[in-house]
Length: 106
Image (cartoon, rainbow, N blue to C red; front, side):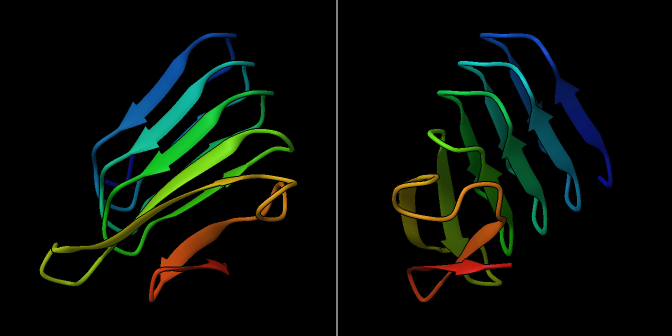
């Protein structure tokens, strides 16, 4: 909990499972994932993906990269999962979460 994982290499991954944690990656073709509640994932490299699956979590991606965000209720039940391409479907370099199945800026 309350931890961080970061990576700067291309084709790499940063992953975290703790609540209130962060995973970040600056390499191209990379991934940042976080499964903890109230956590964040971000990617700054090209053609990368940021994934969050915990309750009340958020993700952001640089232009041309992707986010995958899960919305859960406070019991942990999955309500929605959506993907978006930064700079196309959502704003790049901006944190988003899902509320009622829709992307909302944080």
